[in-house]
Length: 102
Image (cartoon, rainbow, N blue to C red; front, side, top):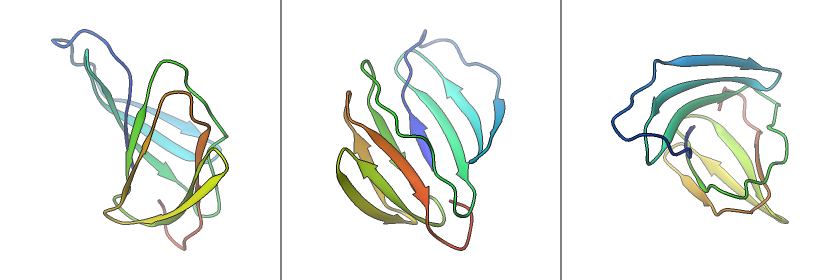
């Protein structure tokens, strides 16, 4: 899954950074003025915490696996080549419900 969000200077490209979390890991692919692109891996059976961002929207694209996206009180099943848009202020998370990494 790739996530785009943060704003920084458009001419700035940061070095790739990697972070481990209990639910899996993430790698920052690019940071610039208009967006921040990350590749997030969610391990089988794991989920991200329920979040809400006041100043940014997110666009998630599933590149492998299957899962359930929670948007406020709604749940959306997602799989490879599907995406979802998360508007500013919307409670959201993703849960890996499949047999493979998401």
